Length: 199
Ligand code: CMP
Image 1 (tube, protein in one colour):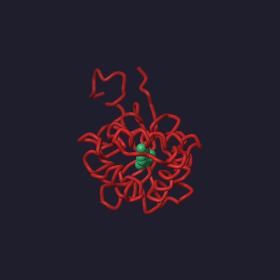
Image 2 (image 1 turned 90 degrees about the horizontal axis):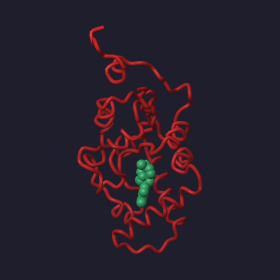
Image 3 (image 1 turned 135 degrees about the vertical axis):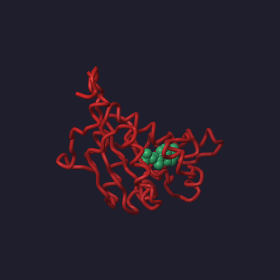
Image 4 (image 1 turned 180 degrees about the vertical axis):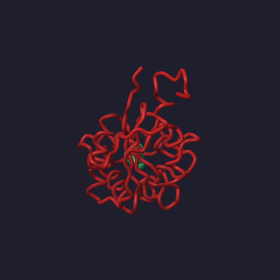
């Protein structure tokens, strides 16, 4: 069967860079079998960070709604409307992402989007499973971040859908900066016929 080749965008946020976790995190994606096909070290502008997070206006309200739902579940009273809250979260995310160098890269491989999300773990560090990047390396929480009026420091971003990965890859890379090359490992991961591996 032909494998489901996907590309996904990953950002190691300023906290990952400041904590010297670049190699540790990237190694996990290399190890699982994903291929790095583009990479850069960059201090994002506020415009770039905004473009990355806001694909369309509806997303601001959706983010506000997700936050309200989460707060209600934790018994926290919410006074703001979804748009105001969403905008507040976006402002914090933009401030955080543009605060220092980040590592941006594109991973390619079979079902790269969901495999990468699995390795990254859930957004709120309090809930991310042990063994995931966020579960293993963060102890921040939405509550702490909200109290300090800042974005949650959750180390890493990974695209959540095919639409998002296409959009986000365009925000960070020009087409000529992406290299879809063959590497020697492809054969053992994807070759249809491995009857004689010595061939
Ligand atoms: P990231 O993976 O970079 O992409 C979207 C970001 O929005 C996410 O990390 C979190 O930092 C932030 N985010 C998502 N949901 C919420 C929420 N309910 N409250 C606060 N921040 C959120």
